[in-house]
Length: 210
Image (cartoon, rainbow, N blue to C red):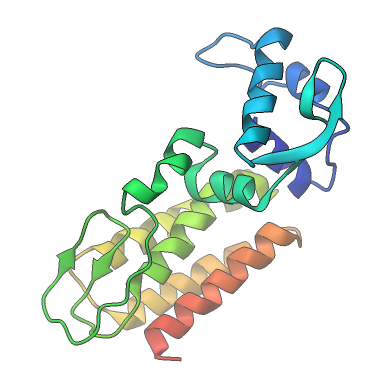
């Protein structure tokens, strides 16, 4: 539901209510469609957890009318693919943590694949991984042709792989960042595109010491 709402907002068409969700292809779970009676409690739960906001309606609960993602709801979609459980449990795990390791030698992966200490001392490699992961997550919303979307996904995958592998080739990192940035700039202007470009610029600064 959060992912569907995010897609509507990114497309510049925030919904009046959840009726379009009920009629959409997103309204399913393991092949079964949700009933109206199942969606209403879910809306209330999302509102209580401050993931969505909106107007109340008789017998439908909060956020039933003009639903919008909160900042927390948007983070849940962007960083956790809309998985509410993972988002709510995020403080109990190291997922998504940005760590800069200075003056350390060797190659170490700490906690999970997103936290990397590379031989290239002082580089916040996590910014590169975060950039690549964000692009992969929002890829379906960028409105790119299928071939360009596939190529951008491949480049983002490669950037993520080389920054978590045992290598410290800044030149290769920069080429991959530039390639991903070039693909992103072909997407329609919007909040997601602007965010991706900003993250790409941060990745460039991380490897250039800016």
